[in-house]
Length: 172
Image (cartoon, rainbow, N blue to C red; front, side, top):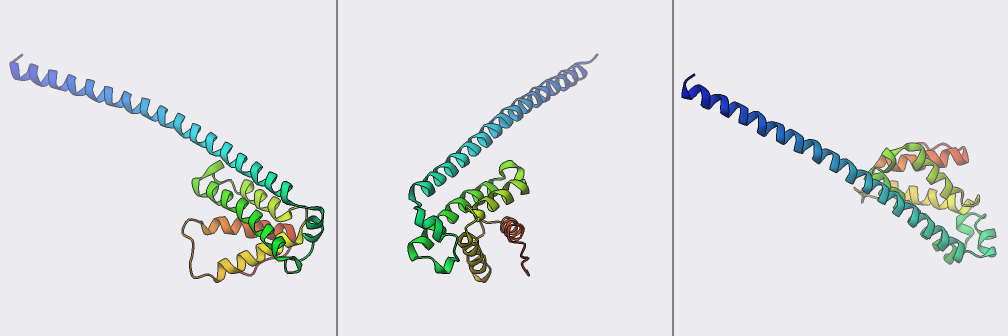
């Protein structure tokens, strides 16, 4: 064997060794990223649940017996404070849910998001909460300032939830 052939053989072996090391490093990096992704998803889930629990505590601590009776009325029949109460509760829950959707939590499982919408629209079977959702939807549809952070498919889940609760269909 000549020197050039030996050099080519050594170069080829070195290339295979380097390629093998790089492949092994990529496998280790993939495992590390998978672990980090799972940790981030678990953390996001925990934060979402903490936020929802805090919002539920806020609702419980601030609602009165009179509010509970009044919230079964139409939204327009509420006092300004009660309207703000419904609006704040709805927006708090919707912001968390929209953020979860944007971040792809629970693989954007439609059932999870739709059921969460339903739970907040029911609010103890409060008509005012559903009326507020209708106002919110109408304002969103009429707005020329479309929010790029909120996927239209997310809003469609809210509409489906409303339709399932009320039995009324939207004419898109």
